[in-house]
Length: 102
Image (cartoon, rainbow, N blue to C red):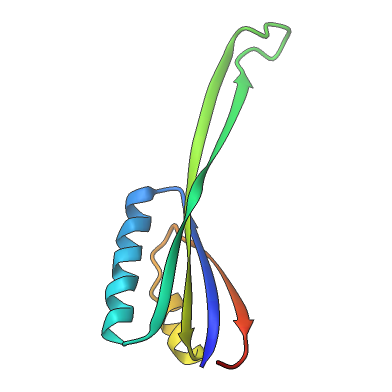
């Protein structure tokens, strides 16, 4: 058994909460040890000038939010690959091996 940390982020909050609920129910049924930590959302703001010339006051302001959480799972690699292959479109994963043996 190895401990994996999976960081999951998405632009859509409803998609992320649906996948988080799916993971919780899937891991409870498989009786694996895990814990979930919600991370704060990242807000990115930028301004785009309407005019290609000097007019600085004519701007459009945009922002987008990145919602994220991470989950630590005690499992083997075969079980982890089943989790990663069932991910919906729009989620970004980053998997890290924390320690080899428990």
